[in-house]
Length: 172
Image 1 (cartoon, one colour):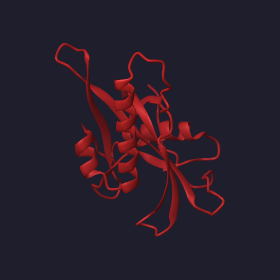
Image 2: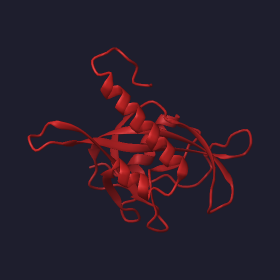
Image 3: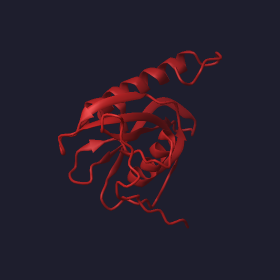
Image 4: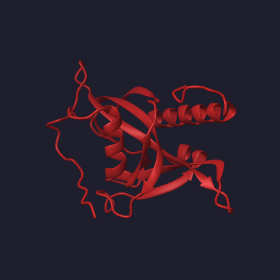
């Protein structure tokens, strides 16, 4: 068994040239299984509760100096949601204001195709995780920029399904 612990502190935190904290998040997703065990085209995404209250969102946190954006996205998904998988091509970058601190942030979002759901994870005692449909997730997600990232992911995956069998980039 491996012991996982969340990173703490801001000594490795990245800031952009304007002094905005840089954060990275991901949208964990999977396809539902049919009764015969085959994969369906029905998409599910994993949302988590915030630490302080029951507001729902996708995993995100600080991008640190010793990691790439993709590594930060995967780290946050393990720490906050207890899932591992394949980090896919960036969905975009958003500038937003933290309601809690009243400061501006620069946020990057990635899709994470979930391959493993952990029974134990660092923040399991302070967060709830819930698989739900895209519509449900869009309804409960508290952050406008995460909703935009979800829309981009759905558009990308829909386009990939329509072009299945053709040689196209997975980073549409």
